[in-house]
Length: 296
Ligand code: FVH
Image 1: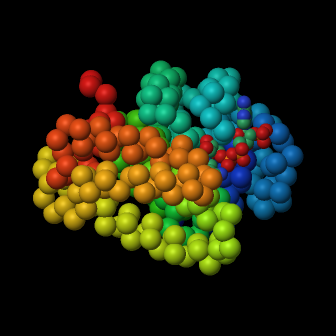
Image 2: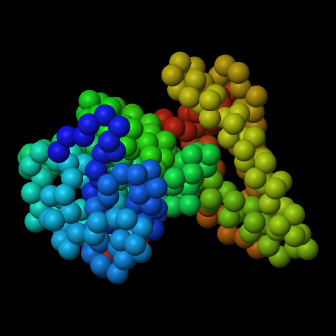
């Protein structure tokens, strides 16, 4: 299936959950011929009315286009869905959130079946899809040549960031960013818990919290990265580890006083203490990264 200049690449999309439906609408709006399939057929009906061709089976959907985009729940559902399809000569773009190991195994699995494979990690929620100013994007990894071949089509729903030939790298970037997000959510939960029983309006408190998190993240992420690259964790330190560990009882005592469990903060404080105990009091918090990594 080749396209002439100016013709939009046909796309097959498997999976019409919240994200799949948003992707479908973006490709339809951009004029791409789109074939869709979903396990529960009713979810495809609105898209048929908007111009999508609805396939009766996953195998029919795969046969309809060279470019197959998969946006199912998890890696197990990808295997289940693609098992009965002929992938020979197809380009499979797997946007399912999964582990790096799953992405590498799925790439090998697809290649054994005669397909080329790109893995993607979506850094957006459905309302950000097809809205460039929302800033959503997708990490891609696998063959650079394959990515470049389909870049224009893949850029329709959201921005693209190619992160390397290793099929697992998109998933690794995705999970790394989402892990940082959950750490941030943990801090937010603890902060709201501290004020929960007081006469403090959470809505008035929210911008104070949001602005503080933004300022701290902006200052610390780049500094941590530079220190990890150089191996020097003591240059440019403004809040050293010894001072910060000395302050931890204040946080634990305040939590106790407010009737709040310290369970989200305590593991981080324990890590700070371990790093201090090996004589790193003059460092930034960067040394905690090394404590987390198991000897390989
Ligand atoms: N929605 C979000 O905010 C996040 C943003 C970041 C990326 N994720 C990942 O995207 C994948 C799809 O997510 P989704 O939001 O579309 O998920 P659901 O709305 O729950 O739809 C799930 C679709 O998967 C189909 N499905 C589930 N199991 C199977 C199976 N065994 N065989 C075939 N299809 C299966 C399900 O079909 P149905 O229930 O309608 O029949 C939906 O099409 C996901 O990896 C997120 O982590 C989204």
